[in-house]
Length: 472
Image (cartoon, rainbow, N blue to C red; front, side, top):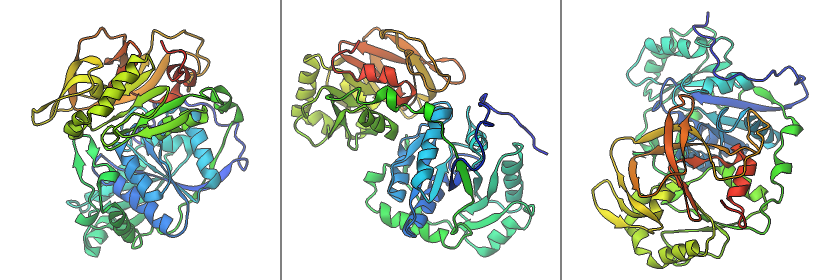
């Protein structure tokens, strides 16, 4: 008997979908009892293994994480989008899965935190779309208790589709036998991944090190894939039927709305935290996307809107500070009254000063009066939404994707505190707690916050933000 049948979202009735009318594709959600169990390693290993077999693998990440998708993209060779029933919305998730199922051999979805953690959780996603769960259990210091943990993952939620479990960091067949011997017969044991330092992905304060910083990443991924060859995961998992509703398409809302707009996106090792869905949204809207580096480019490209995402400016603060010609051209861009959108680390870049973890202070662009200081303790984390007051309001017609209100969804995750000498325009609200979150600043032609925006959560508002002729 299940211990809990709790669902965290009032999902819509799925009876309108007729079995056999959708698209079939093998799919699996990789989840675990807790963070640090090895979800990213196993997901990346699976993606690389099946890619090496000539299969097209599409990988998704549950939740708002930026860094894991970099590793997963490297493993699969495909863009990695977020799947989150609150951030992306039920309809948004459905559309992404249906599109992937049409041209993929395998869909892999890496969960977030523990299987039942969060509102919504990975279990909510699995149950809503009927995607089986593979439980990854770190068993390096475990024997018979492995079966109890596996049983809990599989049976805690009634009617949760569950494929089986795999033991991570298990170095011997004897250890694997001890793990599997007490499992109920209905729980499949897929085998073991040994403890292997060569496939261990290094971490820092915001999570894993970025894929582009790992010089041996392909060798690591191929080595991880070689371990999959010794498990029961070499065959494609069972197929799942994915459905679509044409009326949910956002194409008519955003079609060519930004045609003729040149959006400059700063993207390098210092600024790389940007949703693949945001890039796709801007491209679908007809914007011309121009990429540049605040680290290595001496000039800012010609454009109409400047988008500076989050990242690790504190790790490259000296190099950013010394790129004087680029900073001067960002200042010139601002003085021309063109829109600048800055998220988290991008906002820190626009401040007067940034102090790194060692206490060393660096001058930044100076477009926003204030300073930021890195700290060892986590300053903020969590999904949140904000009602931007300076835009013309309209009627919100959807409970999943806001198309005309001023509400934008997103999240924050940072190890810094900022003292900004400006009156904030508004403040975000955390989901689901309702407590207040990050401050949002509308300063001259700049919109900036610690919050990372998920643009498809409100297409009409996103289009207004990135409109070169009408800002706020």
